[in-house]
Image (cartoon, rainbow, N blue to C red; front, side, top):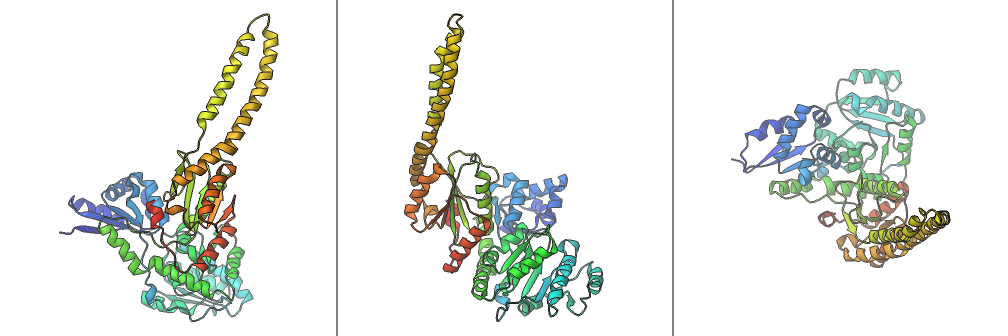
Length: 483
């Protein structure tokens, strides 16, 4: 008799339940399974999953990274794939009383299975313990690697520094987070990473593997330098450097701000509102985003297009609000599917073609004379000289069009598209002189905006962090998404 049926994971629950439902029953599905890629590579399983997902009003992936994977496997789902995070009981997690500069009390909360890389954490901790004999590591969790890990601890001479607590109730885990200063998490794959959000909510510094879901959960904490992402492909010393980078005495305010963002994005109230929207047949509102707005002005055929694309992905990975302004009809590859794209006019393709047609028409008489026996040799010399001069003229005309008329027309076109996306811009990244007038017009609307032709990841992180610290209350990106 239900009006709405909420299915938890598509495989196996979705494929079992969906065929039993009436057509008038709305179905929503939460997806968080870490084994989903194995479903996608098995043709019968993938087909069954697709049938179940296609019946759903919404497929709620717990992370944007997982949502992109589902959308790639089933393009026909379109905008029915939405992101609704796992809830984190932030109000039930005690917070550290104070931030210590040294990070010598390490905590791991994890299943003891191979992809969690607990053995590597032990190697890294052994290196840390060699310099900090007072350091201690506590591991909460159980799994098939428990015995081998215990043997590794003994082999490393860490019996007095490493404690295995096994499985304990989740409520007890929440009550213990604040007793430590550093949370270590080197899992090679996560679909969300609840423990990362819990650790930040408790006021711990976090070092995590740099997976897509981990970057998503920790984006504000990383920008504020209370969390660090380490590449598993690097050596153990790189992970040690990540820990050292977090050791600073003045991180208290930044930690408070990171905790605030975790609560805003993952609190049970926020998640409940999102789920309720899907029950009512509405797309859930986007979670709070870092209050840093970036407008990228670029074309896909520019030599700097790959650099602009990297800037877009980096900006969105740390949670900034990004809008791409490009030539109308431009074909970009590799853009994030949720990126708002504004197409502006300003192409003078007709002028380019007109110039070439005119050159060809004036060339035609000389080309014909070059075939006449008596005057052909002189005409051929004239034709060669004409071709050289015509090439110079064509380059000159195209240069004038590219540097004067096209930028002017694009600047005017930007004004016709001005909406909420053009207000409160913090950074403009403009690719070349073709976008200078457009950038100038946006600067008039945002007098304090910073304009650059390129920007590194470190510079971008510095800009975003400064804005976060100056704007304690962050707006949502719903207006941008709707636009």
